[in-house]
Image 1 (cartoon, rainbow, N blue to C red):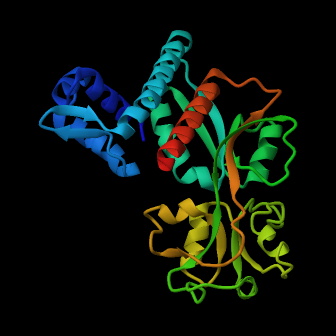
Image 2: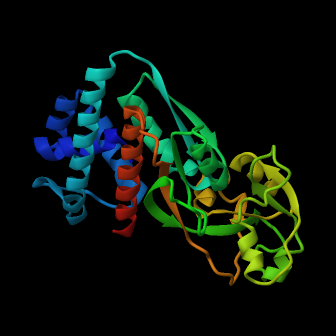
Image 3: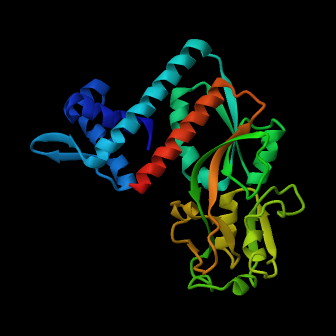
Length: 307
């Protein structure tokens, strides 16, 4: 979902049809149709009923329209304010991202953020949650979009929860455990994790350890600590190693059907993804805009999935 798609949908409703909307937006009618169709296909929802009587909103379209208008109003206000106060001054926002939001949420929002603030550069850092939270506290990051660790101390942080997700155990297609495995069988394989490769180990991140500690099983061996999700996936595809990653990783076109979920009867351990900043640090206007866009996109996307 992009700002462009929302503008297209609202324009069709406001102007009463695709032809009038395409003239108002100065785009081709075919391009406008494709823009809205892409949004409908992305979520499996039909927003517009196309019939001989003309263009009418579906019940889902009626419900979604006020969300779309609210986002566009906020985006327009933010753009107007920034144009008035920032002129042509170039600046940057330092953003930390954990694996889960780096797959879909952040790339989708950054595209629209760049359209709104073309002179603002994003300094993007990917890491595990404990590293990102440490960087926030040390003022090396302004914002982090990250998985929230269990029972972490948030007393000095501002935390806006966006949505819940869950991890899955994955291995290469054709892995010996592809049909299913017990926790004891999983300990026989090497594991790969994402972490800070400058450190001596990945013990600071509990996302893998909790699985084995809760089952009173011995911890498996770590074959490698990777500094990105794609280096981790490359290792999985070339070995029998296993990893625990967000379910959304399996939806990425670069790994589709090459890496598969390993069925188990183990608890899922769902977790929250949130936008986090340091309470005592005043965010720049640019960081405030980015935070608002991330929050709006995540909550509306979650609402649409529930529909």
